Amino acid sequence: MASHQPQENPGRLIPLPEELLVNVISHLTNREKKCLRTVNSIFKRLSPLRFDRVFLSANSRNIDVFRAIADDDELRHGVTEIVWDDGRLKDCRYSPDNDLDDEFNERATEAIVAGPDCPYWYKMVRLFSLAHAMGLSTNRMALPELPNNIISLTDSWKYYKMLLQDQKAVLNSNADVQALKHGLMRFPSLKRITLVPSAHGPFVGRPLYETPMLRDFPPNFGYLLPRNWPGMKSPQSLDKVYSWYNYNPKPTSEYGQSDDQQREYENQWRGFRVLLRTLAENPHHITEFVMDMHHHRTGINCSIFGWPKKPSQLEHDLVKLLSTPGFRRLDLALLTGDKERYEWPVFHTAFLRRALERAEQLEHISLSCTLDIQPNGRAAPLSLHRQEDAVPLQAIFPLELWPKLQHFALNRVPVRKEGLVSFLAAMPDSLRSVTLSHLAFIDETSSWQNLLRDMRDMLD
Image (tube, rainbow, N blue to C red; front, side, top):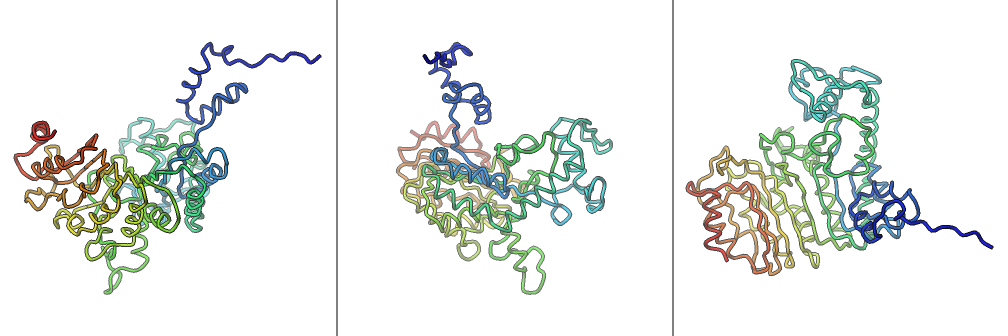
């Protein structure tokens, strides 16, 4: 006679109904679920792993995990979003724009200070990045002292150098782009692509997204946070915006910029470029494209929309994406720099409106720019005040073509209060929410208080 084997019962460990346990477990991260699944077969059954979001970047660890999920016949069906991390690590020995303070640059960046070929710039970046993360004093007169029980400078540099080599191999082979193409075919529920300039966060050890690459970092690993997109390095400065066709800050010859200069300039936005090109060239069912700047004053170069002469290939690719049947969400971030000096040409060429007209099923639209706004609601430092300085909202957004619009957001643009209220009054009945932030009021008498009062009195 077979011996009786007692059935496992999660209630013996936690006296809760199974339905309640399932609800509690649903709020755990996959990492926490993996630990719980090792307890017994019951918890393994109650803790299925869920992968609704996957990550891609110029890193082989992210690519390997992405492909593993794409090739799993169970997990791939749950993926609804791809997050593309466009943060690329730098080797400041070979970068003229090395993101380091002047004090760092006064020392030779090639100087060897520790271990096998560890340069001075990395020593200082590691020191101050960890000091900021740990809340230590960063007075340059007295350098902060790090704890002794953390990963050494030599081992940190070895790890960072390995990351640089891996990144170079991925970029040279376009392995991340090939993985994206594979994912478009393998994820049947995929709806959204989110592009972030950098997933690494404001401090080391505090990422915006816990990608496989970042989760694998050793504890207390200090490094130079990626800030590839213009406008990310300093919130106090505006990056100049050059024409997408003629990047020419310092021409190398009488004929203008070199091809290498132009390519390097465009590759600052590599993620945006390869995402739109890949979507334009491959079948997909993406209906949401989100540029998540996470409060950074940056975005894609606004001159892709036909300034100064014609639309770019990027705009053609974006138009094709917006033409996807059922396309419902666009969060567009534009790097506008100082283009308000020239009456915002991107908003007067009609190329942007013609692109937006293709998304007739749009439900969510967000537009952010990089205008410098003073606390009093005025544009700084240009002091815009003419009526033509205001962004012509009704000329840009084809509200009459968006009967399903539910959310509208506007950030860092100059507006006329009366024009904005009239624009909001023209919104379709489907509208459910509006987000307005960091607006610059052109007319001197306007303010947020006046705007809210007029919205209360004049809008249904």
